Image (cartoon, rainbow, N blue to C red; front, side):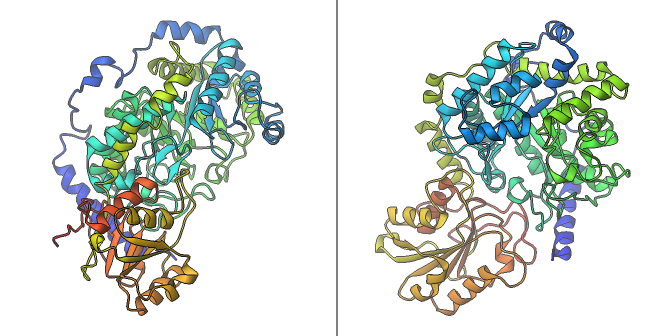
Length: 606
């Protein structure tokens, strides 16, 4: 069961931080933003082209109604190729859409965009992704209204990354929150954006602007920069400028804030219990900062927020939230994209035929991944025919989408090139930057046994065990194996073993490093493993691979670290801290109820 007392403690602490910072704020409209060099490139937003609105208006006027409606949809498509998918992917396309290929899907429905997923087999390798993007753009530019696609994906880094090695993989949001460096956050986004653009992907569903004040949150957690809304706001704005400085549309999500929920909107409908005042203090600041930074797009959340809209409609379908707050209160003029419409949170109250129409009536522009695209497309057309939606309302969203495409240069050059992929994606300079940024994120939470740092020069025998979560992004191995390898490279004699063998193997080692992953409250196999390892008398070092809340749910160990993710860069950074090759620089961006306060982190001298 969720620990409601812990959640309330964390919420109160975050509110206190927010109230203190709010006292220094300039006004209800937010502090003035200092102009940057990016602004000189485009007054409408960082590092983009000024849209020719008259030209785009003429393009909209030339479209048929079906083409206009198609521009609103961003759909999945199965296969690694636009025109030659594997047979199984062709069958998936036939079953879902009545077409064989992704190119046929774009042509038939006049789509405005395609979203890439690893599970749809879109993201096997950088050159393949670029070829897929080029093929899809060729189709879009030679059929129908001849409008380039906005190709997108979820490349948050950390726990959520659709594209893995050899692309550069950076620490995720909470790790960046632990470093506290807006410059690092911006550089990570700029490099990540450059690599996405090289592969033809011009919209990233990042950064996450949710303020995670609930340790029991099952869907956000380390995807958030932290629990201090003003620290989160600074890092969100930095990443918006980084992505868009690289020519990729940033998408701040999940409005109006998903950080204090106990239900995953993929499988249910969360309810946000904040008051309006609490929302203004805790949830609003990062989204306001994103708007002030010129963010191209904001994604809605499939959550019910009674204090903002008592109707019981999820935010995605709420006109008071999307139009009343996001458009009117925050002054956002860009593209509003729904979270994926195949998620349970948006499908519980209305049918799949009604959801797209209601989202548009609420004020959304892009309709992301409906479960039944043919039905959704027909439903929007029928709503226009019946007068429930006006064609002018559809055109309003289409024009915003075309302005975004123009701002990101898609009308000038939509096709990626193989040469650019080789010159940009996963190059040494980018990989080195990822390691440098990761080095500032590892947080040393406790070291009462003075086990850290181990003396690598003495070649100590170390045992590495624990949970090996599936790689979030095609890293070089399970985290226990990668950590053992990196420790060995630094001079230790480290061996990775399965948890079932760890207790018997522990004697004779200088220390046992046990990797944990989202430890639940109460008894369970991870708690049992740590308890039994402690009983061996060998010093136990806990390495929390994802949520930093793990130490509060386990017996105290001789040392405790938080890495916030389990990619190669994070494991290398942890190994350097464990051996003293690097000083721990991370500070907790969230409090760990009952154990550590917000901002806690030790140096090797404490």
